[in-house]
Length: 136
Image (spheres, rainbow, N blue to C red):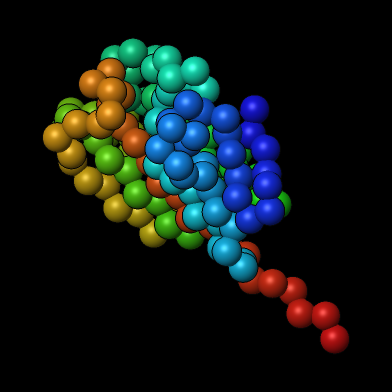
């Protein structure tokens, strides 16, 4: 269950408390989301072996945090994804296109040697920005 405390947003995931970080930080008009994977709050990895579903799940975690901050997928300006195997890029890209094809954020894809759990195939980071409305 995601909750918000001031400018910090928490999902309740076990690593947030253990390693001392927030799911997302609201900094002025920015919402910066920490790396998200297909791990449930209890740490169990979902969709084993399916990079597409893991990517959708990871982006779902990130977008939930962005929505808790009052923004939406349409405010996403940057995405980074980390993939552990070259063969998964198309599936990760397909999931990205389904969610952000109309938004077209800046995007970087990186191949990495591994993630915190070897069953994880992808990790995503998302940044959203909304200009503050000036009231005169």
